[in-house]
Amino acid sequence: MLNILSLLPTVNQSCTSYLNPPVILLTTQTEDGNIVITISDNGCGIDPEIENSIFELLRTSKEDGMGIGLWLSKTIIESHSGTIDFISSSDMGTTFNVRLPATDDQMFF
Image (cartoon, one colour):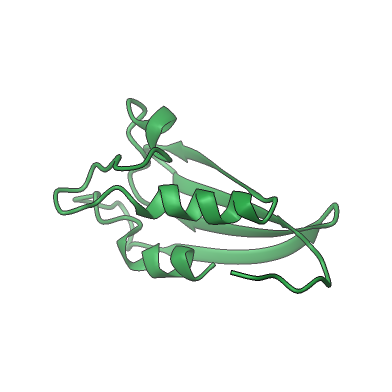
């Protein structure tokens, strides 16, 4: 979760213009025994040409990016039996959904 929060200031850096002021929305809910964390922005979306590879290690579209952030987020989430997915469009922005099993068990990092 901390890795996701650290990415929030850069979520929509790749957009150069907005129809509206930039907005990032973070919501949480429980659903079917999972905790669902949703992170949405109103940016220009993810380029369809790279949608299939954004979780790959060293994949970046940023000039000064390292290509580690989304790969690391996915690796951490999956190590806790969770999932991460997204939907994106050029006119609505991008929404990432993180699902983690709700548990009372202690989690080690």
